[in-house]
Length: 305
Figure 1 (tube, helix red, strand yellow):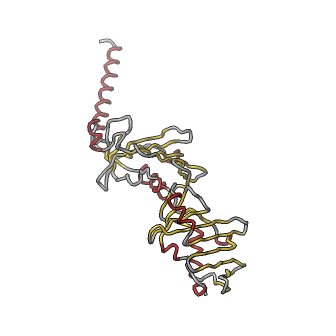
Figure 2 (cartoon, rainbow, N blue to C red):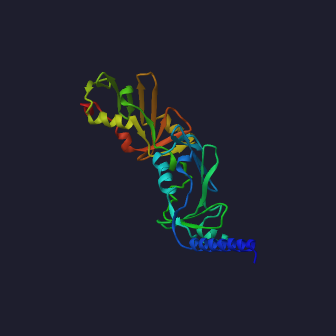
Figure 3 (tube, rainbow, N blue to C red):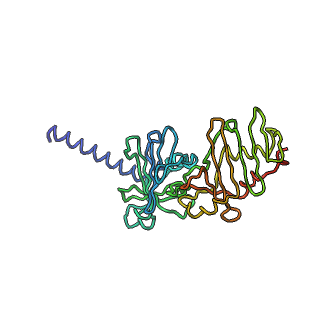
């Protein structure tokens, strides 16, 4: 046997040993992180199923919904993507490697939900089809181009949602109370104005005029509701349905600012105790709140003493 042949045989033996070690190692179960995308490189996220597509984009360090419309994204929901979805663990051993199991685990293209992570160049960093699970502790998932189905060690279905309402920020208006010059309120039998003057607020309703202490509970409730206007739900593209009701609102709120800008809020009851809210005469995006929200503004002079 020549020296060259011995070298070839030695190389072959080493390759066989490496193959066997790898094969054995691959058959040893280990917990691994399912998604491999670097969270620091993610600048957009797309979640889609057979019915809907939702896309999020990071713009100036703020996450926004860009499809199906442009709105601020709910920070808590976005954080769930990075903390719960990207960090979800699984076994390195799949629960199935057969396409025939796709229906069982609801990971077909038509049954599952596809999530994609993109970098700033719109290159796909990672993607997976998330199946539906009846378990509160696991979720099936697979790569779109693979037959292997993995069992994720958490149910992430509630995070990987295409429902835009789940992703929208429910605080639709925020501002500093010190920038408010006047609040005008008309609702039911009450109609009054609150005007900011130096370190005091002045109340006037046509019959009564009084100074209001900054610690007055009613004033503090009103300012709290307006400076961080948070709604309960969203009513999109249904202005025609509520047009007549909004012509005769149950509550109207005007907010004026020292810089000359203003906001106008109109509310009408839909069905006790639910109200539809219109902000600044917008006819595309309406909102819903409840009676307890409205009650914060239906006040009289005695409430400000």
